[in-house]
Length: 504
Ligand code: SIN
Image 1 (cartoon, rainbow, N blue to C red):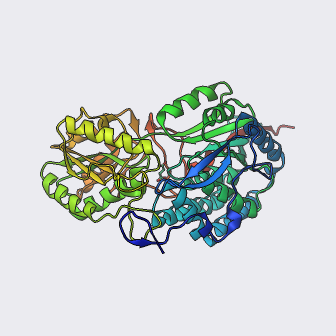
Image 2 (image 1 turned 30 degrees about the vertical axis):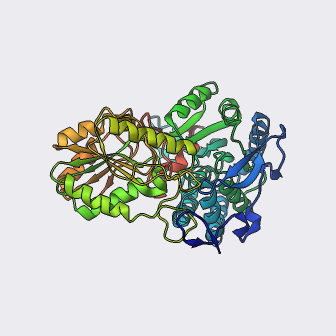
Image 3 (image 1 turned 180 degrees about the vertical axis):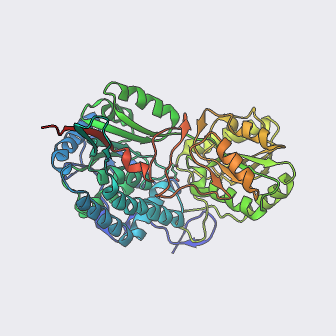
């Protein structure tokens, strides 16, 4: 046993050597059924554990050349893959799901090490990620066209749904495998071939998924994976401008989403964009305190506050403000910060050093604007990684940076409000509209607020919005398109109308 030096407790340090199924570990991209360990440029980059800052692995830094090769391989594979039956694809999806379940512990460990999230959360992400495979295994066979009553008796009209072609899937570092299966699972189930671009910070879990998908039977060229960190804009541009790519799905910031959208215009590519949010969490005087606290912990501390649906502005009605704040301080004091692999830890590190700096800028700005730090408020310099104390800011105002920008960290920003109309206007005062939460015991209010919020998703008395069967996505500058749900697979097919003259 070694001491991790983070809290004095003895702790077995884990690294990739602890992964039991070594077949999951490749330090390479994957193109046309081959693992590519050396990039054309000869360049590499390191994958680092954000909790310890130790190097985990070195992978090739691919550029637009490998990207074009991956797209070509996917394009070639599409010619036969599009002819597979929905049932054949459903079986491969199901097998991929089963393989995920057989490898939960290893997948979770890889995820925990490269992203920093706790092992418990990582296991949750593996289950969440696999649930998309199970869901789209079912949906594969439910994609169908219609027969349409014609206006002209001499014709018959039908529609068929067909896979759109090569799909490029750009996944973020905060959910490195769930976003791969949510996008690529839907694409493959629909009969599209794929190019995966995991984030440079977290390629290893996506690589492990490519191993399992291949074992599940997806043929050569249907899955291609590009590893990139410093060349990411060049890789992104190739995916956007390459005419053989017919669909691009991206999860990430609104800033990058706008760049990709412009680049995709050159080939009028079909797009799904799941971009930044600024989720309001609204707690009314009639709320059950336990619901309010549980929802806050779930919506703010999942993945250490680094989700696009993290509660960014917490609006608390004046009658419950003090009671809620006191209960929240007590609940958050119980959170244990540390290495994700350590027993009992509930909050891991942030994934980037710049994330701690950004959170500190928001905290200092809030203090200048008159807010009070009622818990935390400092980086945890005694730990080697990117750790921040769980923080509560009380008495926030509209002039803060947090008002218009996601803090993306375990920082709860409390705003006081008086009336329902007022809070609806405040909550909607954002360029983006992704997630939101409302805590109330009043059924009428629950409807009024759910209908009035300008967002893609609402959690009522719940801090969790995500489920494979529930469509995920936003409005305004949070993007468009839906992932998961019945809509998720529709993003990867197009409708063809067939008009048949039966007059002879
Ligand atoms: C995200 O943060 O991008 C996705 C979160 C989720 O699926 O719950």
